[in-house]
Length: 284
Image (cartoon, rainbow, N blue to C red; front, side):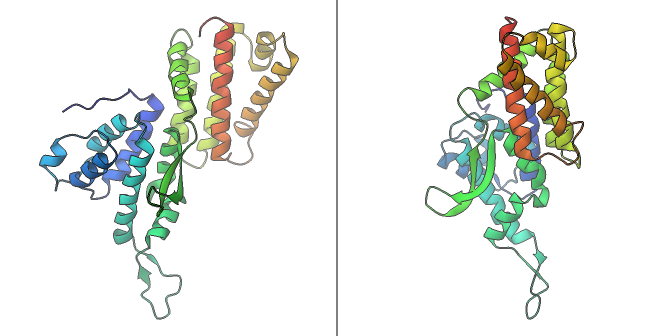
């Protein structure tokens, strides 16, 4: 049975794929996913009820995530699934005992320790955390609906209109601004890909996206192009050039890897600046 949902963006598809791989690596059964979905009023394939003892595949996770992500209950649904992962790690991931005298040299972590390690990026969750961020949330330890300690998702990019704006930006850029679109999508792709230099490269891609759009309209480099586009307001121009400098300092000329929060600030402001330019030129 096909599930209904909103088509995710390219960056979101990559994020969903990475999460699907992480979830599929553990032996979570169809029955568990069906139960989480029923509790949260989310759709799931009826096959899960017919084959409750079957281990869920990454393809099944991808279908589920793609269709549940647009729903209002997604953050609670995902938090419940993440708590299932906490339980799995608690019985499969042994860690070195910090106080081995009188204790086994290796022990299994508690649920509290598992949550902490996931947030710290253990067991592949360095990329899992980025994927969750690309879907619009931060992962943290908090309280669930029953007041119990649990992993929770806190929105970071889901303010009213943000996701709709991101989709509309990409649609507008397909109409004659291909290089800007490639650079914008590339920023999210390289950020999710991880690596020692990924955030710096992502910031550089954001700068390229803005510069390509400015050049399309002015045939000038970023600085002179921004001056031409915003020659009627010196304060606005100062804001745009501040963004240019922020992207440059965090990108090509960065001495250290920028922080994740700095990347998301840069991504939001860059997209807003691109919207302003498209509006000014009558393409929004």
